[in-house]
Image (tube, rainbow, N blue to C red; front, side, top):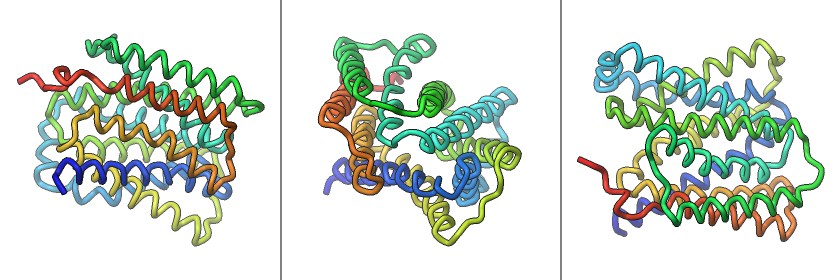
Length: 297
């Protein structure tokens, strides 16, 4: 097996783990309030990642940062973890998993437009075609959605916006090449999980957790967060960003299938067509010309 083939299979494993998170979250939300649930997941993940953050190399990275860099890291944690994940857990308590998954797939479009505005990353002809295909797919899906919680959809839109803004923040930070991806991930998870836990403790009752709930939290933190994020960063060393993005987009279909099998969340044939079109459109948006993928030196 070549390094590229191995990286593709490992990336598919990561997307599968992340897709199962949605099912586990929906199950856990039956007993755990959403903000505390998210805070416990990412707080435990931060504890697991702490040994990496305490390595001499990581400490030197952090010590060499200026005040503006530390503020940027903290803001990334608040947006990408606290707001994004808090909104995701709340939305999943009110709307089907495949509905929120489709909403978040639109972040590919919003990230692309924000990249044009703030990072100078221009879209090409094929990517504009992907924008159109994605919007058609979303229109087909939501046109046949039926009765659904408007509050859940509103929180889902907040999740979409926070995801997009957090992605632009992350790109801006990573462009500076001052920090490793693991350090950025670990620090942002630490800041965001602290905010989630604080807000959850102030607004939600502490739940009575059974062994099943603790097992879900531990699995989500250790496997689907700490391990999966680390494995994702490892595969990014081999695969171009466009290929990773294409594989990541398979989550839209994976989540729909897993939600149908384990949660009984059925979709109509036309909604399935909408999901497939949206997935295909986001692939086109992310698949840049090969020449555009070559980093400038």
